[in-house]
Amino acid sequence: MHVPAARIVFSPEDRAEIASAATEILATGALTLGVHTAEFEAAFAAAHEAPFAVAVSSGTAALEIILRSHGVEGADVVVPTNTFAATAFAVLRAGAMPVFADVSSDTFALTARSVEAAVTPRTRAVVLVHIGGLIPPDVAELRAFCDDRGIALVEDAAHAHGSRHGDGHAGSFGIAGAFSFYPTKVITSGEGGMILTSDPAIHEAARIYRDQGKAGFLGNVHIKQGYAWRLSEIHAVTGRVHLRHLADFLATRAAVAARYDAALDTLGTVTRLQVPPDGLCNYYKYIVLPRPGIDRGRLKKELKERHGVSLSGEVYESPLHRQPVFGDYALRSLPVAEDICARHVCLPIHSDMTEAEADHVVASFAAALQSLSLDG
Ligand SMILES: *Cc1c(COP(=O)(O)O)cnc(C)c1O
Image 1 (spheres, helix red, strand yellow):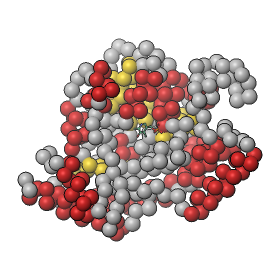
Image 2 (tube, helix red, strand yellow):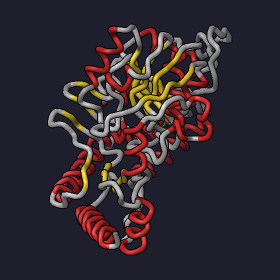
Image 3 (cartoon, rainbow, N blue to C red):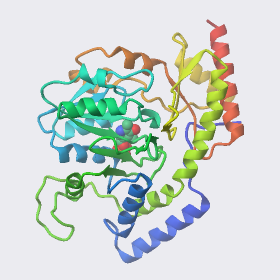
Image 4 (tube, helix red, strand yellow):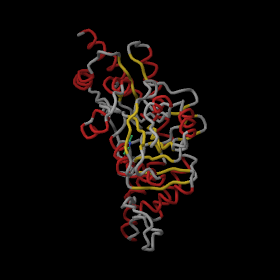
């Protein structure tokens, strides 16, 4: 059996529906900022019980627009060091300085305490990243910490479509949330992004920013320094069709995760990210921490060559403060992130994974760990 690192799921019916919508879009010439974008926004907002949604060209654009809408130019913005480079690039492009913070090994996310060590008198915002789709159960503490200091909490929810904590959906815990529809994400539109917010001012500003800072679609009055951050209609309809399967995808992923949980807990040699009882994780990634000393490169090679199992990409392999491009911003060592980045692995998890595939993955994982331990 061969289990790939990722699988992108569009059924034959979905493909036919998207092809037919694309034909209509090309025939009418209504190629951007049309009805499909509006429908995608409405459906995405409804799925997350959010008042407002703005579709944009990427998750990176969504983050930059939120930061610009809040106004962070010349300020510091705290970001976790174990995130995708885009989180910190968006901060730089919005005219602010990224300040890297450490995270908790329980959630892979920022905490009030780890942020406290990174705030400066110039801090205007904190970007919380829901790593692997897990909304950290102590998110309220971080929000209170930010509120007390007049700092905005922004969610990088690129991993977290459909995730919840208690009654709250991803995108509802701060001033706004940024989602990505890059192909590997739980919902994809090919390329694309979405901003969710309950703040009418951010909603309005985001709509202006994404279309070259124009006061309206049809006019030519530019009131902000915007950019070409629009989503095309063909991308919008692709995302709209994929989004219909969100509940099904999450159910399949949760069932696979439950099988993984049960099998791994009997091993005793690994820890896994725990989802609290009142949390709902979309399992964008299934994250496991083998004990220190296991060589990740050898483990991945063994799994692929002997068992046909490709692990999914790490989140993340190397912390940003150790990446060459961010060398100038790396002020401190951040030991928890350094440890978990070096050590964790992500078991493959797909929105259409079968029980047989899941069982093959955990059996192979246990066998590979065993053989690496025997080799010393
Ligand atoms: C994918 C991702 C992004 C960027 O999304 P794009 O749509 O590729 O621009 C930002 N942050 C995180 C954490 C991501 O995983």
